[in-house]
Length: 116
Image 1 (tube, rainbow, N blue to C red):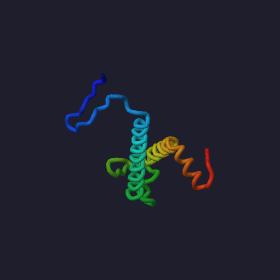
Image 2 (image 1 turned 45 degrees about the horizontal axis):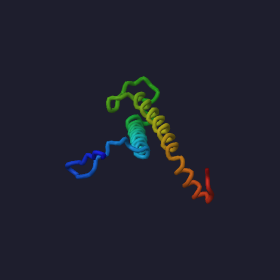
Image 3 (image 1 turned 180 degrees about the horizontal axis):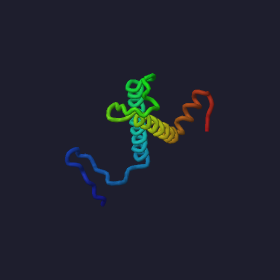
Image 4 (image 1 turned 135 degrees about the horizontal axis):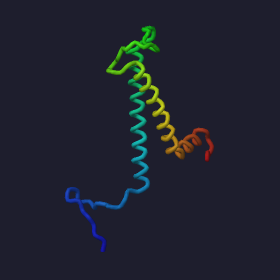
């Protein structure tokens, strides 16, 4: 006889088995997509700060002038913008690799042939 654990709050059976591969992959997708979205927000926000806070023609880009916007120098904002962009590109590459079968299926339907 297998002992079952029932939740007192919901009345449903609690499962102590490890999560399935599909559930684990779902959590992986969620983590990758969440990190990619955070990187995208960092690129967008830092780009906005660079565009509005350090406009062209002010002489601030490429100089040693110590002007700061939101407690970061222009060099720090540029570094943040570039590295967030690299992270976003890497995470999107992983995202596409995780959804490779879906990409092939949709591309095949759009092109009218089966891709493999």
